Amino acid sequence: MQLQVNNLCKNFKENMAVNHVSFILEKGVYGLLGANGAGKTTLMRMLCTLVTPTSGTIEYDEEDIKVMDERYRRIIGYLPQEFGYYPEFSAEDYLLYIAALKGLKPIIARKRVNELLEIVSLTKVRRKKIKTFSGGMKRRLGIAQAVLNNPEILILDEPTAGLDPKERIRFRALISHIAKERIVLLSTHIVSDLESIAKEILIMKEGSIIEQGEVEKLLSKIKGKVWICLVDLKEAEELRSMYLFSNERNCGEKVELRIISETKPSVSAIQIDPALEDLFIYYFGEVNKIADFEI
Ligand SMILES: Nc1ncnc2c1ncn2[C@@H]1O[C@H](COP(=O)(O)OP(=O)(O)OP(=O)(O)O)[C@@H](O)[C@H]1O
Ligand SMILES: [Mg+2]
Image (cartoon, rainbow, N blue to C red; front, side, top):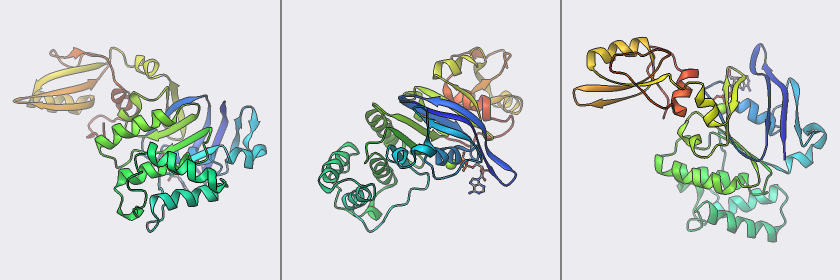
């Protein structure tokens, strides 16, 4: 089970949305981390054969997916970023409908739909119309439709967007559960979604994969560069204008800043172990800009 991407490019006129990307995915969960516009959706749509690459190839177990064609499409599951559903359908009818589109036999489809409704905790509301569902319920339904055909490759584009922290925890457990025996690639800009479930992280910036590896390996890049500083308001303001910071917390009269810096940023600074959110800031943060992402 190996998905290999070789020198993949996608241009939209002069815009290189995906720029000479190469990587190999094997069984397990991979996180595709990148800021808005990095090229994540374009890359994923190429992996799902929905966008034709400008150049480069994608191979599954050493066979070009263009040659595999329908055989490849049968083993792919996809949750799009903009997940379209049918608001008047019930969860159950919707899944049965998608199962029919995917060519599942009715008896198998019914069994699989029952199983999946249970796995995504929608059994109780199976007959309710989708338009009455919360964002989290719709996302879980989206994941269920993506795995209907028991795909070997599962592509999830921002599956946690708009979910509250409780739904996110539930989602992580769900992904771990359905990820067994598959290649799962999931994109996000919410780093905490990946920390406990991703085997490897791919960091995408401006169309290129700039890093790929296990969380620990990537974190070793910024080891010794992450600091906690407990300072007064005036010093906090100075530090914010000079350094990258990945978090801040009010502590009464003082502020606790989490700073990424090669050198000790303040006399009070204490070095701490890096976390994935620090790495995200290291690659994507800009000094003097307020962090505008969720951590
Ligand atoms: N159909 C299209 N036509 C023209 N340009 C496109 C098209 N799709 C994407 N792009 C451009 O390609 C680049 C990458 O977009 P893409 O949607 O792949 O990024 P992303 O990493 O998924 O972003 P986000 O986090 O906002 O979802 C952007 O500059 C975008 O404007
Ligand atoms: Mg996207």
